[in-house]
Length: 511
Image (cartoon, rainbow, N blue to C red; front, side):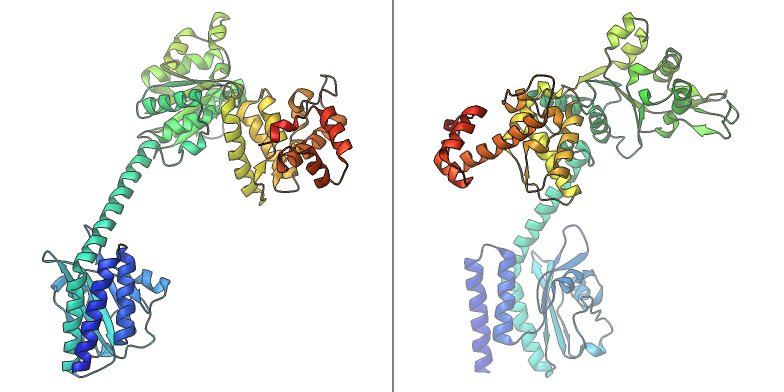
């Protein structure tokens, strides 16, 4: 008897010491089970915690369970022995698990059900916030009763610590709920990583998206081809209350003039040759959501008239039909054309222009936001390295210089295509300048000034490759030409000649 009491006092003392020194409550609970296992021979033990605002108790700490078994331990109030203890707030002794039908073996950790099971509630401010249970070898009733009394002492000792971890979980779930709310407000599918850029021009675009997203205003996105107008349209849609409804995109320039009316408004069976059945148009398909009309400046005057009516009255008829259909559609349009010039030339209706231009957003060309070029290049590098299962880790100095010097007439789309090509053609973990397309291999971009302005050639590409190798060697050896020559297994005289010929300044790499 004295030995048991001594052991129990030792256990309680060690637990209290652990509580005094441990700041991580989860680590504390694991240490408690370490003590119980070592001092009392406990083989299985679990501590469950009630999830805030629910009737579900889940295992927070355990001993003798694998991570998979640990995850399975969830009990509703009144479910199984653990749930019964949680509901009644009274401890339970089960002398023989094999004879108790309430035992669920939810964790599926026990190969058999021999032995006793003791479970006690953890009470904080008279509320059950968790339970602690242990498996014990079958024993006499008075021995199990003493085990129960001791486990109650442990539960009382841990109550404050368990309440603390429960509050932490509640705060974390509150933060998750708040983050989820913010994600819904911003749009789950189109977070800022889909619109890469930190330049002041792009920050102004982000501000405009935030201002207009949750309204019903018609938006006109303007900018050169390849600047990402559809991405902005999607960001507006998925940042609005319509995010759960369709986003339908139509490229007006890609559709023949005789088909665009049918595509937008649909047609009835027999409306024209080939109309074998009724077909819904894009306006109907986008009902409740957003319709994005790209290259709106290319639609014909006849379609412009019908489009103006839809925007004003939110109703239309299918081609060949006489039934008026009403729709609730938010319209976002985009164009790379100068609509003001088109109005003056009589190719675009002025009244439609003012109806579309309620909230204009201008997307800058890539050459107007050069500070974003490297961000975009790195984004596409990661994207295509993953797509093509390559380990391209960085962009060489020469390649960076070439990209920064280039004027990018195709904007972000051209940059993406260049990076994809370079990732495909590179043979190591670096994106080199010579892997970029020939359109970037110019004397201006490579600073070689060895070929006429007519374009790139073999000599340009060879010397670009040579320049890149020498620059990398100088960077590695802090601008020391002699060390770079040894690294490249050549003489200092040859290196100095090539440095002078290529216009490289070793002083740039001294630091």
